[in-house]
Length: 108
Image (cartoon, rainbow, N blue to C red; front, side, top):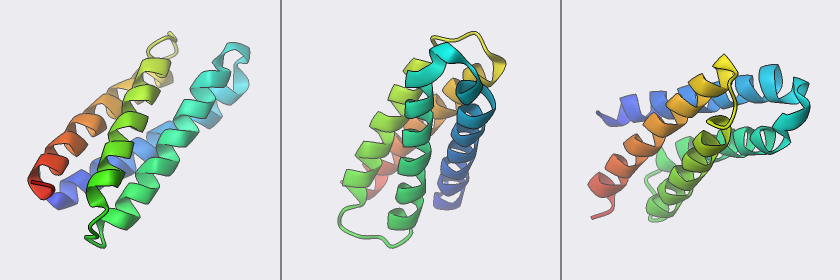
């Protein structure tokens, strides 16, 4: 996957997390931790896009944080049967894997 596709996946992850947070989690009583995980993941993806596009020496740190946020969000969303939570978990897993690849490529 090229750099542009990586950014597209980050963008898809952040928008899916936002949708899950506001269309699913915010309206369901037992989804409080899922709501926090989705919003955190969306924020970290946003930061990763902004910092990554600058090519700073801190890129690896932000990619690592993004991987952790995506994996945590996926784990939380997988606890729920809602279709949007399942979609969010899937996108978060894909995004985490892409960021692992990006980290290997840019941070050797």
